Image (cartoon, rainbow, N blue to C red; front, side):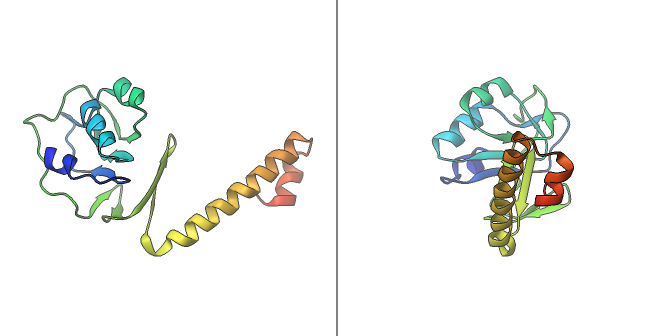
Length: 149
């Protein structure tokens, strides 16, 4: 686990699966180290702990829940820098991940350009809809006009 953590490069996200309901895969000290290394976040298919400390660091951590027990000797990392699956979605090293407080989007390499283009297009459209609604347009008319809501 510590080797995998120390191997993080700037801009990367720590991704882990294979959790147990008996311990957390991620915590504040790991977030501190990852942040020092320039990592951008953690995505674990399992629990995190020390959530107040992680939030205070401003380090994004996406997990399935929270549990106070650390991993310690209860589990170990079998391999890292390899593909894995979370929630039925395959994630390979180098896959573009985008996360916010509402979840994580896994963007396959072959779709990156199109996904980013369409996302930016939608954001621009939503800004137009928001402006129109603030100026008094009804939701029905906004959807008819812009096709976005």
